[in-house]
Length: 269
Image 1: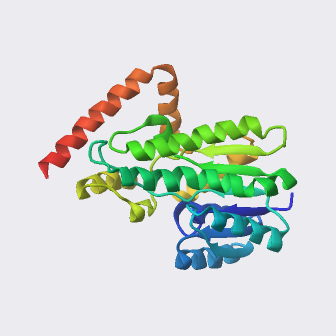
Image 2 (image 1 turned 90 degrees about the horizontal axis):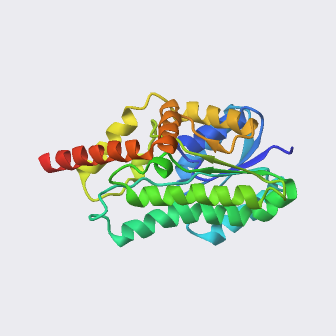
């Protein structure tokens, strides 16, 4: 193993914490994000943690920027061993309120950004027999109310990961998909939705999480080491997923009740 890892969305949140977790093991990191400032901060922290690497601005909507990043990994590292497709944005709103632009934006970043990341790096991964780690969300499995575009994009990431898991086995490329629940993060900085009340609602969900991005990064590191395909870092998430697999109607009813409460709150403002 050459210990070379590429992370998109590495300028903050989970991307940064994953960078630090792998840096502590002495990995070389290729860090990308659309935020130059965030990337600089991550690189400094990575160096303090004992890692080394380079930063390159990359918008995952633009395939040419991802192929350029793959070329940079080849030039600077001679290849790559792990690709982490983590860049993502939050969004919310009831289906009737979401514009088609909201849908396009969400799918372009949260789903197609992952598709393009996998495609751009596949040739390098075939050489190194490396790993893909795609960051989805519990929203992909639970489909909470008032976030249909986010749910659909993240469910697509799970379906893509399952497809790659079976297609790439022969090439000896491991695939992992991570479904965190809401956690303490700055995801809301990118939030796009029709009402401020909706943003406040999602904010409360995020704040109520006792688990930090750093905890999640550590859990991912351990589960990847155990070759676990679907990685669910939250205990509550694991329990909810178990219930949904056995009695999905219970979850649908719970979500419908939550939708009613959210509607009532939005109306009350």
